[in-house]
Image (tube, rainbow, N blue to C red; front, side):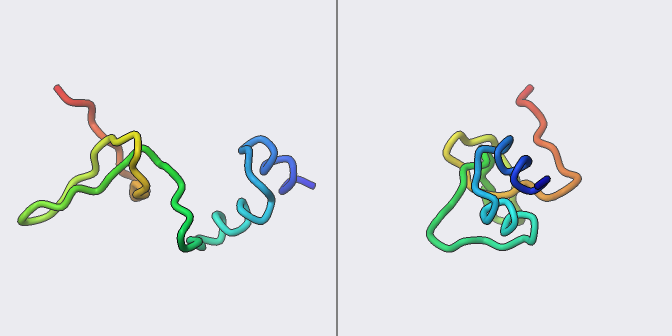
Amino acid sequence: MIERELASLCGVEPDELRDYLRGYVKSGRARRTGVTFVRGTHGGTYVLDPEGVDELPAGNAIRPNA
């Protein structure tokens, strides 16, 4: 019951919500997150990107450009 309610609030099917919560990634179906990881020569950074599909790691935040 709660699962269906939460899925409805999120606008997804209960199976999709279940897979997301379990950490599964469906191949060929990228969900836009608005974040892209940009690799540099010695590391990388996450940047805002409307077409981005990368997951921002837990505990991280994107700082607005100054």
